[in-house]
Every structure is written in C-alpha cells, then in structure tokens.
Image 1: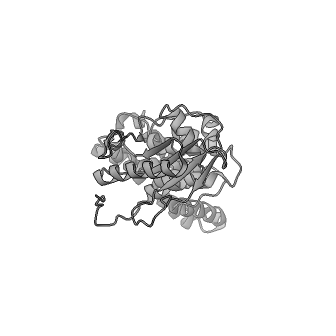
Image 2: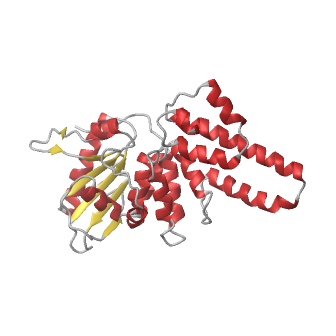
Image 3: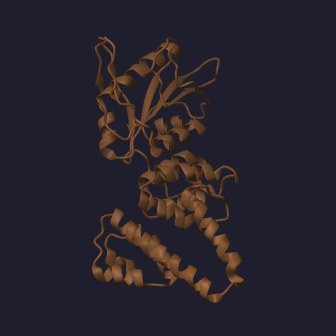
Length: 312
C-alpha cells in the first residue's frame, strides 16, 4: 500500500532553507551533531560528502530528502545520514522518514540515521518517538534535535571549530547570556570569506529578538554581511560617515531617527521575551536620545529577567 502524503504542497520557509543550506555547506556537521548532541558512537574525523537527495533507484515524486550525506571514504562508506528540517508535526512526514532510511540503507548497505532538526522542544520530542511500520520487525528510530540537544556555546573558539553548530546554537539559545557574542566572535576567527554565510544562515533561523541582538553585535564589525537589515545597517553607517560635513540639522535628524529605531528595537526584544513593560518604562525608553545608552539597553534586554533591570 502506497503512502498518501499531504495533498497541499508546502513552500519551504526561510528557516527550513537555512538549516538545509547549513548542512550542505558543512556536511561534517551531521557527524558532529550525531556524536556530540545525539550521543551516537561514530568515529571522529570521518570525511563526509553530499549525495543527490533523490537517492531512490526508481522514479518517485515523494522520495526527495532535504540533505543526504555519506560518511567515510567514497570506496568504503561507513555510515549514511539523512538530514531533515522540520518546524511542524506531520504523521505523513514521520512515515516518509522511515521510508527514506530504508531506501538509503538498501543503497549503501551501511548503518543509516535520519537527523531531524527542529526549532523547539515540543517538535523535537515528537519526532524523536519511534515509528512502527507494517514491515515486520522494522521500527524506525529517528534522531531528533532541538534546543535541549544543541548546546549553548559561549566560547568563541568552540564556535569557530564548528561554525555550523555555532549557528544552530545561536538560533536556539541566542537570548542566553554570551551565546550571540561568542558566535560573532567565533566568526571573526574564521577566514574573512567564511564568516558571512554562517551569519546569514543563523540570522534566517533566529527569532526577531535574536536577530536584533545579532544586528547590534555585527554593527561593530568590519566584515560584510548580507541580510536585509545588515545591508541597510551598514549602508546607513557609511552614509552617516560621509555626511559628517553636511548641515548640522540634517545630522541631528538622522541621529533622532536612529534613536527612535533603537528604542523600537528594545521594546521589540522585551515583547518577544514576554517581559512586562509599564507605561513609565515605555516612556523612559522612547524619550531617550542617547544612542550609547540605547544600545546598552538593547543588549541588556536580551538577558534580563524583568524590565526594571534594564535601567539598573
């Protein structure tokens, strides 16, 4: 009996595309996560290479995984990994993942794991459940990871050693103290051309509050970033530098506009974290024109437990 999938096709989200691109750019990340986050006993230092996502040997419209990776030498593979990015729960998808694992095992005749990357605890726990099948003796055991399995990396050197894991860490734990700072500092340790793609993937995977933290951190760096905000942010900074010699009134207008933007960002971060903001708090934030103070408040808003701590 063939599996009936959802009849309405779903468009991939920016989060899904970023997770997929992360593993395609760094195939070894799958082995790192299976070893360090899922506790799988795999040899360290295995070479990893991408395989076509349509690894079935017959025409099929539904046999296309997000990312397929073979671990080990080309002539003697050791292990296979299928990476799937899942934001929502789908019984059809769970059965589909079991089919992926069986088909890939038939192809390489080596142990196969399906790594399901999820943005939250509930989805990861749901995909981690064993999946019974109608094939006698075959129960599918996925390897699902979410915030509970991905470590909160606060050491720049650790982030630089596996920037893909660092990107997942900041996307899942970026509001925790020191995580976003370690991620950006770790990227600065990479070759100049390597850092921006990891930043862009982390940015696409992150919530609005974490995105703003990243934006504030990279505003102090010189290396190029390409997210929509970053383009505007760096362009604005350059324009302001060139305009120093223009009329004082115009410069003041720009400063006021930037102060308003920082105040809005503070309120956005507090709202995203579910912290109560009184009318007095809001007035104090929106009336402040000191950019240095506002930027301090933005960073502090990401870690405080109550809005009153913003001002102390």
